[in-house]
Image 1: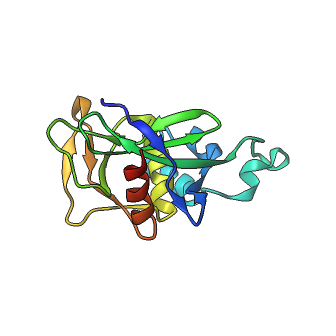
Image 2 (image 1 turned 135 degrees about the horizontal axis):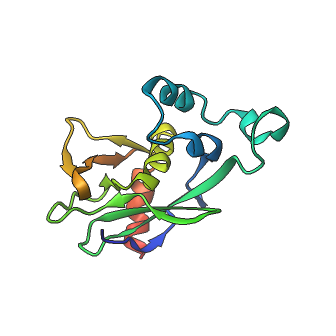
Length: 162
């Protein structure tokens, strides 16, 4: 997988793009969950009690992460998120498939799945219609996504600044 290089924060009115990650939910989303439990966990994302140990939560459950824009080695737009745990590339550049700026293929690796869900829930990204799917390592599918307005133009400005 090509890493994202030269990532900088896209700015809206002088501020970077931030979104909330619910680590309490993320820690409980694993492949062993059945569909009903997974849907329930996703429906409870961001609940205040997740960060309250007295009510079954954890002190580090809710985190604020930032979105960074850069380029993959092949020239396509790359997205990286950064938070208390470090940086994580959430975009991927399949061989020979470089979408136009503003669109990207999500990283099919499991660690990137939850931050991508939160970016979509926050309205920062959305799937492209009609669906365009490619297959990553080990046959994992990944669907073309795009950056939504009002985030699209700041993202393009950040890519030009690098």
